[in-house]
Amino acid sequence: MLQQLLAGSLEDAATRRQQRPFAEVEAEALARPVALDVLEALAPAEHIKVIAEVKRASPSRGDLAEIAEPRTLAAQYEAGGASVVSVLTEERKFKGSLADLEDVRKAVSIPVLRKDFIGDEYQLLEARAAGADLALLIVAALPQATLERLYAFTRELGMTPLVETHSASEVARAVDLGSQLIGVNARDLSTFELDRDLFGRVADQIPAGVIRVAESAVLDVADVQHYREAGADVVLVGEALVTNDPIATLSSYLSV
Image: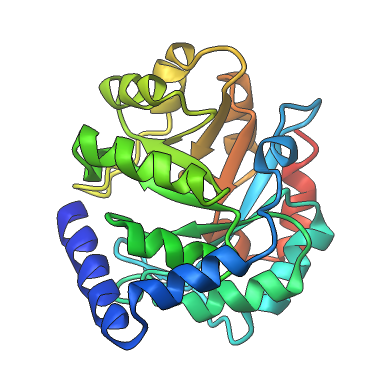
């Protein structure tokens, strides 16, 4: 499933590239104001921090929410205390778009994450051109040489890479990159099964000073507390926020 998602995203990017050539998107990306300081925004604090996600659907759950105006939801996230807004831009299974990212960027003053299945430089240029301050790189989807190349290119554009892992060996690969922001996703992107305890099993492999992000399997305050006790600095949450009152839900999480 992961390779299918990556292939689909790359195919869609290739279609967009026919309409907007590499050089055009590169010029737009380089003309953007300097990206916001993500590491400062997510720096460890007394309470957990939250990356709040604009998420319409997923392969495992289907449709989650009608989000007519991503900017409105993102503004609620910022008002509710989120540190970063994540925008799913994958079109086929998650029903997102780069237009959603651009809409969100105009509405918030906090950093914005492009969450997608990224496999080439063009997608990173698109992210920066649309206003993203950080971009997701999934270790499981990329050979190490490609991961290293895309990690370096993300930083060249001034963005921060969020390097997502799903196992101890993938955490080791992320650490080898020198990543300062490492996510551990409880959802296996091959089977879509959840393992909430995965974070706790690998957290000690993430060096001190690196920001630890727990992704997926966050539904209530108990889940946030579970991750916090296991060493998470940040939780990334989508489904629970788009299916409940976002401000009230964020408030409950930020008490942890």
